[in-house]
Amino acid sequence: MPLLVMKFGGTSVATLDRIRRAAKRVGREVANGYDVIVIVSAMAGKTNELVGWVEETSKFFDAREYDAVVSSGENVTAGLMALTLQEMDVAARSWQGWQVPLRTTSAHSAARIVEIPTDNISGRFADGMQVAVVAGFQGVSPEGRITTLGRGGSDTTAVAFAAAFGAERCDIYTDVDGVYTTDPRISSKARKLDRIAFEEMLELASLGAKVLQTRSVELAMRYGVRVRVLSSFEDNDENAGTIVCAEEDIVESRPVSGVAYSRDEAKMTLMSVADRPGIAAAIFGPLADAGVNVDMIVQNISEEGRTDMTFSCPVGDVARAERAMNEAKERGEINFSGLVADTDVCKVSVVGIGMRSQSGVAAQMFRALRDEGINIKVITTSEIKISVLIDRKYMELAVQALHDTFGLDRAA
Ligand code: ASP
Ligand code: MG
Image (tube, rainbow, N blue to C red):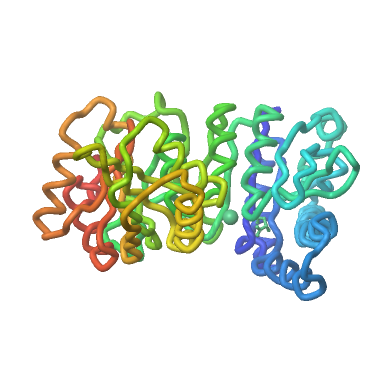
């Protein structure tokens, strides 16, 4: 029998009524002839509440007990979903992670999936079971302790099951009806994409579009799992949601697929550092050791052997970056005449696999910003992305202008 993975996020199982609605969708796929593996999140807000309880109980908590507590929200929804399906005369049962067993590393609260044996669940399907309901977000370590996969981890559970079982598709039901060309709260012209390539989704996910856990997209790309993101609040037809798939499966060939932003960025400049072999290592080594998440880097042309080095990082990392640089200076590893932090900047990026084959995208982006009188402070590019650092007060304007200039409000 063909197999489908259906994942329901917290808002889709927030109440018994919503669990019933989700179960009806599952029932429909069973009637269509599928074996279904359902992955559930905890009811909306539950995980936050559990995390709060742990933090209130113990300041320096034992990560193993954190996972024991925080994973429990999913156990409740898995059982309730199985019961709801049984009430609809669908043969269903629930599994907690350790029962599968979904084996992970022992990195508590950020564990990685190592293996999902399929024999246990497949055997039940062979015996007439129609739906396996699995608690998302959790697994079991080599030491036999309960682990969790990091916030948003049920997405990764779902994709991993789809890969392990060779599912036809992995449907992720959430509170938005798909992936958009940009944040609809910023541009009213944002449009839902029918398809997006894994790589584009990865860029958008890491740039702050919080639809899917980044790791789930990496996993989907590695194993070629077709993921569909769709709303559990709407009646979906064939074309509902957004399909995240391989580049080859996308016919649309516009250069840019989406505009992303990240609001809280900072730009730091080390002035007049000696331009000599090893200087970049001497600067970025201590920054890495201090846990500063460096993003863009620009080294200016040098004059008389001295140069300015500029980099960007999250605003929250500025204090740590300053300390690391001053300490490196005191140790005599680097020398600079000044350290300037600009904490009022943001990053705006255009992303698209079409850029690989179309030239002039950067020029078009820069013209659009010029026409709005927006000054660009730093630029970086990759094969499928161009990012600029600009003053934060122009963020909305820049996103809207770029969305317009690349015609993202219209279907290609
Ligand atoms: N319930 C967990 C969380 O909120 C996992 C998930 O829903 O994906 O992070
Ligand atoms: Mg989520």
